[in-house]
Length: 178
Image (tube, rainbow, N blue to C red; front, top):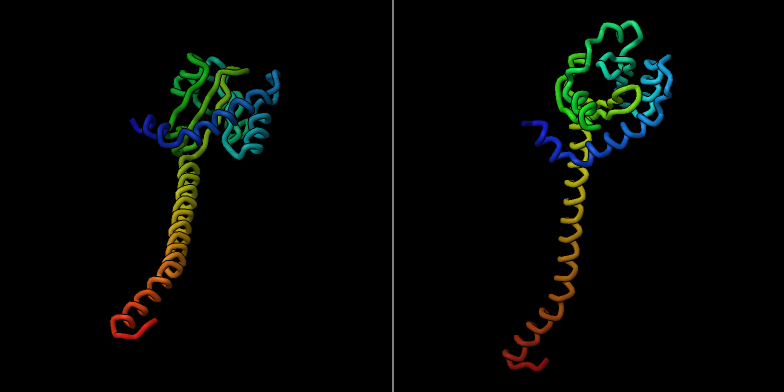
């Protein structure tokens, strides 16, 4: 449905998120202690939500939650992006997050300690897309203005000899030599 359309409309942004989550996965230490702290550091680094999920769906670290809140999060095994990551290596989803109570884009990959997932609020994605659209609009307007100025300059340059020819033609027709 809407997710497929989103993927086709924003392949560059999804590519960026996929690249980021692959780099983050490399940075996760193979040590079960302090995974929530690791998620917080990685989230600060990329300015996105980072979640570390065990293969059984337990959330081991999440940059948006402290240790006490982390224990209250529901199991993530049934989340579509987690299921896809465990089944095929990568999972993508655009959905409402029950944990953060906002629409998010999620990219998850199978990696130690099970799944590493990065999330971006849809509002952030919309803002980036809006910024890109404004840049394209301004570039188009600048090109249009430049084109109009260039056309006026070329018109002046081509028009001057034609005006002179018209004046000379009228003078000849009136019986005067140019």
